Image 1 (cartoon, helix red, strand yellow):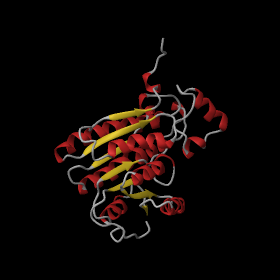
Image 2 (cartoon, rainbow, N blue to C red; image 1 turned 30 degrees about the horizontal axis):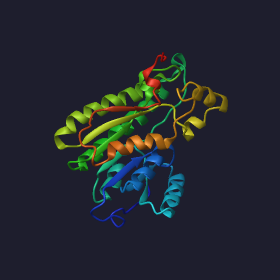
Image 3 (cartoon, rainbow, N blue to C red; image 1 turned 60 degrees about the vertical axis):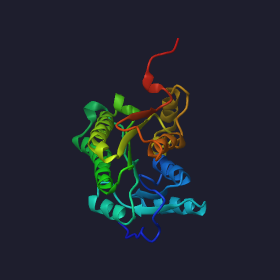
Image 4 (cartoon, helix red, strand yellow; image 1 turned 180 degrees about the horizontal axis):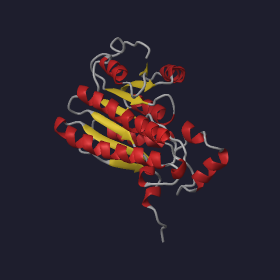
Length: 253
């Protein structure tokens, strides 16, 4: 991790939000949205060059975003990033991975890696942030509509279902501290991760959506920002599906 000093960048007053996986996709869109909402944002990612390039671009637009290069499973590194800021008001766990594998071909290594990044990579930042939050803190995890099930990604389904369960458990333990913990479950979203699939596969996935197209990362960021807002005081332990209605199933009549 690169040494950073966030204290020199922040003064008391504005709320500070930390966003993991902020170099691209939903994490980047969330960093932008929260900065526009008045948060001072610490954008975290392990892809240093990409993260610094994006943060420089946002800073040129007048947005208050600082880069912190760190791995989400590196507890000591995360603690250092959190301690470098004067306060921790919100955390968004947007970092995660996905890969495709049939159940009978899925290896132990792939399964463990998925759980390590998607579940431990949510647990560790959330625990460290919660230890530093005061009343009014917000933690938003990113699960997935895929938690409801699907073919060719049992390991991903299991990891995102675990994130939903973890979110509920954290919300129950943190409610007396007045820290709200919620999850956003995106449907198929147009991100660099989904665009890495062959074009014909991406198109086929889009055709399965009720709207006939993928969500934009901004749509997901809007939901995340709602759950991070100081005015959203009576929602905790919930999972908000942002999937254009696909999770409803069935056909209208």
